Length: 307
Image (tube, rainbow, N blue to C red; front, side, top):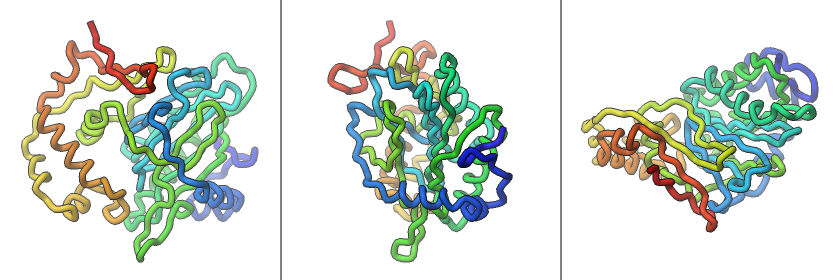
């Protein structure tokens, strides 16, 4: 079935401009969304999603009350929620494999909503900007097209993407909103920032850097965060980047060098250093098992030691 906008099937679109021209209320909702105050999310209630990750849960979850992600420039943040069950999923999509990723997000929500007879699937898209290479625009179209071919009826509620998420600062185009959170209990989606991006931040970044595919990081039935096992091979050549200046790293390791957040270069260097410190990924996953983390009574993620 197609995507629905205001209960009407969405016709095939040629461009995001075409989408917004035909649906001016989406423009108004996008303007309203990006004008919301930025929320600094408490890590003790948060499940943070990195690039090429997704997570889903329900309002019954006692460990997670907010799912969030940020640092999205050309990337898009995708929230899908079932209004009946309250099941919600957030994915951080970078265009690496959109057509195989979107079904994973849909299945994550529908599998948590099987017993619910009422309600509908609602979609919120945030991310991208008017970048010179049109990477954002192409990803916007791919994500919309991928959702249009899902068998479920899906209602597009928020569409703050590409030109509707663009601002010019000192002559440079940048995203207005880099990150979002979704309230697991209410389904409210809002602009957000996250000073803490754990657990296992460097390991997760290394997984993405070395080509890891979209992965589910959370088992809501057990309240467990999980990562891996990941595989990568030793590559001493990447040490080259540690001696390069910021401009060089931005130019070659970013899809949007002039729009990255201030911590991008340090983040890339710490990821590369982590890979150099752990040339054999197998050592991080004893017995070939994932790393699991559970939430302690104080709200921190603590690694579960496997016996």
